[in-house]
Image (cartoon, rainbow, N blue to C red):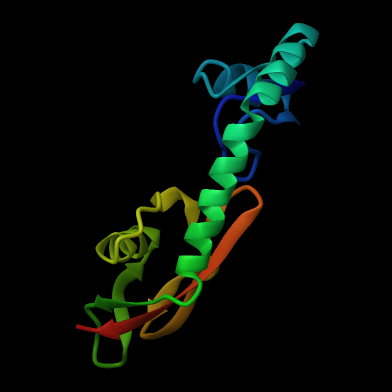
Length: 147
């Protein structure tokens, strides 16, 4: 079934995209949660008109994302964590800690937009990816140190 997304959904698509999903996922989750609507012909026409009217705003949002990416390009974070004597972290470092460190430096990025490829369980240097826009993502280097 085809649906029009009403908000960004990780690993599925972005707002105002027409995507194909399985019937159960669409009818039992996306539509009742107000995350999508069925992509009928009339809904597609309304979407096309709305996109045409919002094209200017979308360009501004993309420009803001590019500015943010340029500012984040050279940044590196240091995250302190409680560790054992061997350098293994008690727990792990997640996107929540990265979002908090970025907020301390003045960058407000939603934690859901930050992904870490591999689990961070030891002291060392790692990379996270922040998706600022559907076409713009930036790599953030961070170092985990023992507290």
